[in-house]
Length: 105
Image 1 (cartoon, rainbow, N blue to C red):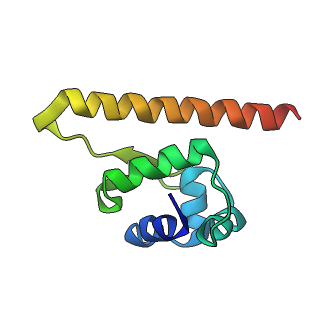
Image 2: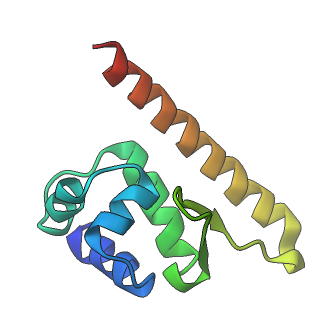
């Protein structure tokens, strides 16, 4: 995962850096850093790789004020889809643990 991948995902979703940051739980400055090649945390890499693997166009932002990323499920291969969703859940769990640690500081 590199800055070009982050830029591609964001542009495929037709989002500004600020909107994309809110979508994945970071601020605009962080997205700028990612796009300029700065280090992307493991939890974010997992989420971004999931978005890239599913094709940014196949990722549906939900909600109005708070957007979430939900991978599109392919009914033709439910077992693989379940594994993708398990990985997504694990990534979200790691993200919450990271946020909790930061909040405790």
